[in-house]
Amino acid sequence: MRPFLSALVVCCCACGASTTGPTITPPNPWTLVWSDDFEGHAGALPDASKWVLETGTGPNKDGWGNAELETYTARPDNVSLDGQGHLVLTAKREALDGAQYTSARLTTQGLFTAKYGKLEARMKLPNAKGLWPAFWMLGANLATSPWPACGEIDVMELRGSIPQTAIGSLHGPEYFGGSAISKKFTLAQGTFDQDFHVFGVQWDPALISFSVDDQIYQTVNAQTLLAGNRTWVYDHPFFVILNLAVGGTFLGSTGQPDSNTPFPQTMTVDWVRAWQRAP
Image 1 (cartoon, rainbow, N blue to C red):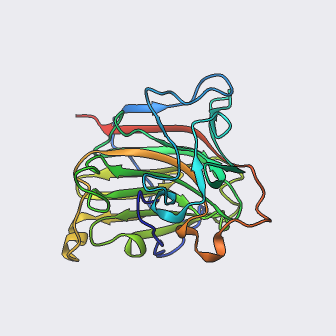
Image 2: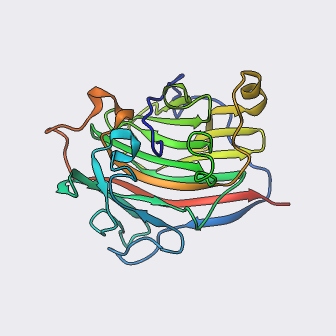
């Protein structure tokens, strides 16, 4: 997901959930510094002390720079608690504010930022052509260092027409859009709409690792990045974003929603948590 510029992710390789490989073994102890378990009554909006609901079709009314087809709202119809400890983002086919779809986008900008540590979310994702769920981070210096100089960490993106494959990416000044550092994680069986899965990053001063269900599938090293004349821009605070887009350039020409795409579609979040290493 990118804030104001379209991107086609370069995918490197696929991994199955049952594939033997390195797993995250966090040092003890980790300190939980921020979390939301989405407790509350059904129909309630998310906690306003933790989340900002962004609305509309983007600052330039251009589909958030990605040619997205929805308008984001702050209505419980599009974003609310379900009364069972979940946050539900709902995309609908309905005309509003010049768009043909509605959905939701939440950010912690101005409320919470992370610099290093571990960030995870447990989610169940949609399975339908034309949907683009994302869990990601942007540099909090966005106003003074516009994207991609601020840096972007895509913890999870998914193309709804390929519901068994999640993608993790990094975007920086010399590697953004189609040149992003990206890699796929593909389930050995099933799709990401059938059950909840935990998507995460472990972020250290010179290393960022991406994981699904505690299995690392991509690690990016600052030394390797710098050796390739690419800037490491992950040395400052980032804020968190959750959104469910409809359409957009990330999905490609064949991945856009059509008359056969069933709506409404949902992205269900069980929890989001951030840890830092204890001193």
